[in-house]
Image (cartoon, rainbow, N blue to C red; front, side):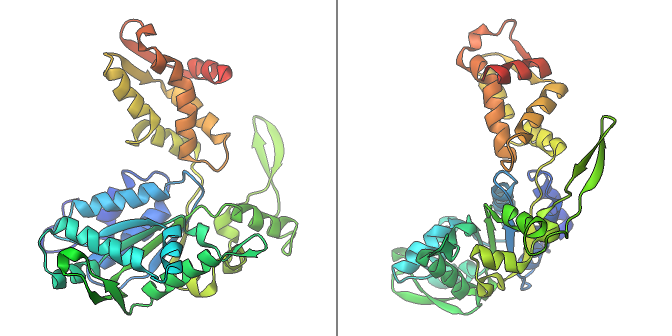
Length: 356
């Protein structure tokens, strides 16, 4: 992506860049790319809620956006990433939103040392805020009211109303209080929403909408079997999120609710082979330090991906677990590798997993 300095990048350019790191999540990449392009163009855009199981790529997407903005020095929007529980903690202490605004000011100062207070406030007002594990601030935990979750949602509501909010200024800027215009902030909240999948599946199979989901016949190796073609994105309603513990007022602040797909076998293979933080590239670097070349055959990579798929709703995280089981004995004693080359094929993967 090489946009001219006279214009911000287009959604296509942004999506191309994000897609190099985020595998198998085209819808999430496109939604984020459009919102980011609008923001960088100075156009108001709606907030985004990402819903996806562990390992589906939510955090990877956030990191990819951070990297993208760091490589666009002409677009100085600060990016901060916070755990949702932090919002609840500061709200309970009587400072709703302080964690977000304080982090934005700190990030601006970090990237623009010596900037005056007006410049810092202006840049912070253009910030991008990632709120991780937003499902942890539900309003109820079982049958009990979750006070911290309620206050955290209320804190985010305050920040997403687009009003001027009082903020404590850093000591480097003289301290005291000032007002920050939150109308230009973009919030991307993400969570796994554990239990939501099962709750919606129960609704359409044995609950209020029983019979709405019909089984289909699938042929596999010459045999027919029945399968329920359930995808959460096809059946999720706002009522399900209300029931989960996200208030209607809170959800109304998110124009886009994007459900990330479960990663397919092919997507997992791609993540395994090319994602920078995947276990395979890291293992290659480790063995290189011992003058050993590590190679994973195509059939071996597929076997690792298939084993990862047997660990439901873990996505790419399961790859690291499975691949660790495959290479751990060689990693413990690299000198056991003969000839300076270690090739792991499908049979080696199966044997290692059988020993695990």
